[in-house]
Image 1 (tube, one colour):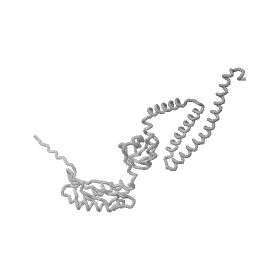
Image 2 (tube, rainbow, N blue to C red; image 1 turned 120 degrees about the vertical axis):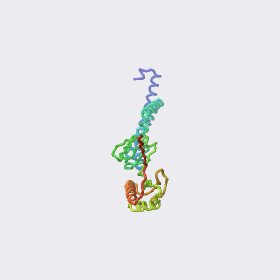
Image 3 (tube, helix red, strand yellow; image 1 turned 90 degrees about the vertical axis):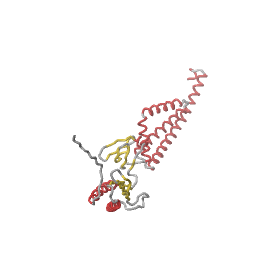
Image 4 (cartoon, rainbow, N blue to C red; image 1 turned 45 degrees about the vertical axis):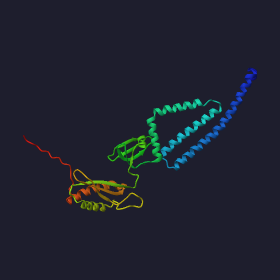
Length: 282
């Protein structure tokens, strides 16, 4: 019927277009089915790979979603190109939108990237005692954008992951053992050997203080005492005492309390700064 309405040339062009369209449609359907199965397979493979690497569940679910969106977007562009539609404008549009969103959310994206790096490389984990950005405490939760830290005085601190991933951070829980470094000052004229002997006895009495090297650490050593400085008010004696990381504060307070109490009872003098004020009556 169309051949009677349209001119032969128009009819021929219309039939050629319809034939080409149906061919493209068949190819697009085939590409869609093959591509959709390929996308699902890649998503499953990527998920298994992340699970084997023991990545945080909140991270790999987010990453798999991103990968899935990107793959489906690529498949859609391929299908559109099959019909002869120019895809460069679509790609430019997506790139422009991505750039605009990235500039608007630059700080948030930095924190997200920091969270991904932290969850992947794990410089610290939940339960570790860390010090960063002027705060020290136990890591309670690692989120995509922030890390929640609980300080020793029960304050909740929320630190952006961007600064944690790129800045300086101390992790006191990484190593199994820690060294307790303490300085004590004694008056000039004090017998250093007697002080060394007294502090050494204190170090040997505490069960949590390690008395020598251990098999699972190359840094642990026997307790050490040395005269480190001649100060303004007296001589400074430095002690280095090794213990397990969990026992750090017990050993720290034990050393300070016991050294002060016992050496004071033995007659050793702890000097302090003093100011003399003379009042002159005229």
